[in-house]
Length: 67
Ligand SMILES: [Zn+2]
Image (tube, rainbow, N blue to C red; front, side, top):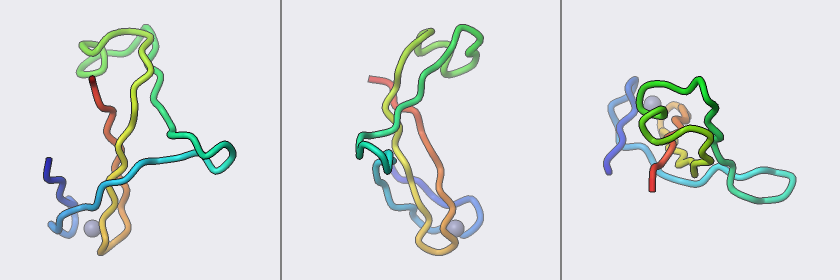
């Protein structure tokens, strides 16, 4: 999927956000109050996160991925 920086309009580069402590991928845990897209994905879920960074301005966007 092509992600573009909202400020620069250039294609962002994908990566994985990892913890500096244990080098494991950071995940998103939803709670019971989750609504919208995350609510549809399911409550109390732990989702992997994709990180996209803009090579121009350094903006990082995080996307919770449903599997
Ligand atoms: Zn940018």
